Each structure stands twice: as structure tokens, then as C-alpha cells.
Image (cartoon, rainbow over all chains, first blue to last red; front, side):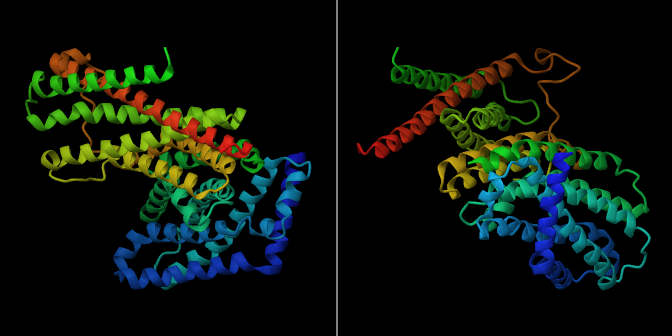
Length: 225
Length: 230
């Protein structure tokens, strides 16, 4: 229970900070929307091809906006020098990690809630029925992204050129999530339900569970040095 | 025996084994029934990827030990293994391309195993970059250990996802479930492969011991500087 209580307080702190400054959220919103325009001008998609490309384009947009958010994830702690203070407090470091995962997840989901409908409107997709299921699949993928992303945001925290290094390290490790999410989204868009996508969904769930556990276990060591 | 002398013997042994392996692969083994002489590159291709896998496993072991006990020696092992692993993986991809061009007609194709190998290379190139871009050594070692562990845990998942995604690479012809190796592969071919695998292992441990020695010497220099002796 202490673990969850610590998580709650840390998450509350991050959300309050974000609510006052709105830096990460606004940049991510704007960047996500901007990407949709860039995609439109880069691909000049015909209506029938839009459906084919939708999963890949959406997921690319989420990955890029997510990376943008991750780059500044530990900034508040660094700026005020309160990372040391947090580490001195007798809390479970796993809770610190878990709170950061939840925080990133909340930001990304908020962005997705805006970007997915915007995509549907801008690219004139006709049927809105697969959207809820699509959103659910995206959510699972986003969890995977946040779990590994938060860990490596902490790992690359003190590196030179950390904004460049983070995607370089993160993206190859994210390949199962990228493939699984896109395949599930394709399935949902084509058939309106998750038919063949079941093994992919299992892979996604497995990924989320394995790396969340590994993250909570390892995080202590990441911050120690 | 002194370590230096032992390493010298290991190197000489590796060189002799490679010479023998080349002779066996190029002269003794018959050309492949379908692919002809091009197939001979397999005698290098398979040992190099197996040594690369071994290397990444050592990265994982070294990383776990380092996070657990915080001993510099384990970090040096992980770092050295990662460097040599990257070398052997890159070598495997190049050899594969040279074989793929005449056989498949393309230098590269997005087949499951090729993609998997390329991802492996990318992960560990990221590992090396992480090490160079972190100035504080202890932090670099910790960060790299985390990547070494997560990367290794991710490999089975990447394997599954990439396999489900698509596959084209040759099914294994030596480790087949229905036949013993000596039943479907010419014995001279198997011998050539075995010799080359042994040769690559010797070469690998020779390189690894040299690289570990370099890491230890770097530590020694740093320690002496700290004491003000240099």
C-alpha cells in the first residue's frame, strides 16, 4: 500500500506542475497535430490508401510526440535540483518510476484523445465505428511505450545530447510494440474487430508486463549512481 | 604460465584453427548441389552469428553482475563483449549480403532473421553510443548495464514479433527436428563447419581477452592518475 500511496503523491506533484505550466502537454498537442499536416503533404493520400496507412501514420505520430514528452520528463526534478532531495527521502524508487510511467501515460492518452478524432476529420475517414476499439489497442501500445520510454529517459538523463540518444536507444527496443500495435490497428480497421490480432495483443500485454516489472526492479539502480 | 604468454598461445591457436577451417571449407568440402561454391560462405556466416549471440549473452551476464555487485571487472566484461559482438554481427550481415546477392538476387531483404540481426546490431550500436555520450564513467556503466539487460530480455519478444511479421530465410538445414545432422548434410561440410566454429570461438576468446586487458589497463592508468603518480 505504501508503494501506491507514494506513487499517488509523486504523480499528483507531476500533474499539478503540468497543470500550472502546461509545457509538455501543449508542445505535444501542437506537435501531434503538426505531424498530421506534414503527413498529408508528404504522402498526398488517396482516400482508399488512407485506410491502409492510418495505423502506421497514427502510431508514428504518437511515437514522435511521446519522445518529445519523454525528453523533458525529468526536467522539473533536474531544474530545481530536487532529484537529490527525492532520492534522500525514504520512498520506494520503484514508486518514483511507476509515477513517472503513469504521468507519461496520462499525457500521451490526452494527446491521443485529440489526435485520433482530428485524424479522422482531416483525412475524411468515413466510418467512426472502429474508433473506440482502435483507441483501446493504441492504449496498450502506449503503455508499452511509456514503460520502456520512462526507464530510458532516466538512463539517458545525464548524457550529452540526450534528446538524440533517447530515440536511438529506445526505438530498436520498441520494435515488438510498434509491430504489434500496427498489426492490431490494421485488423480493427479492416474488420471492425480483433480477429487475427489476438496473438499480437498477447505479445503487447506480455511486453507491458515484463518491462514494467523489470523497470520497477531496476530503477533503484538507475538512480543510485 | 604468465597471462601474456597464455594469450599468445591462444592467438596462435586461433590463427592455426582459422587456416585449417579455411582449408577444409574451401578444399575438402564439396560444393553445394544447388548453390555451388557460393554456399561456402556459410562456413564463416554461421560461426560468426553464433559467436555474436554468445557475445550478447556475455553482455547480459556482465550487466546483471555489475548491477548486483558493482564491480568494475563485470562492467569491463560487458563493454568488451558488446564491442566484439557488434563486430561479429556486422560481419555476419556483410557475409549474408555477399551470399544473398547471387542466391536471392538482392543484397538485402526484409526477412525475419535478417531483420532480427539488423535490430540486434542497432540495439548494441546504441549501447556503444550510450557509453561514449555519458561522461561520468560510473553512470555510463550503470546506464549501459540497464540497456544490456533490457536489450537481452527484449530479444525473444523481437524474435517472436518479427517472425510473425514475415519469414523467408532458409529453414535450418543442420538442426532439423526430423533428421540427424549427418543424415542430410555431407560429412565434409559438417566437419568444415565444426572446425570453423571452433576457430571462431578461439578467435573470439582471444579478442575478448585482449579487449578486457585494455579495459583493465585503462582502469590502472586512471587509478595511478588519481594517486598522482602519473
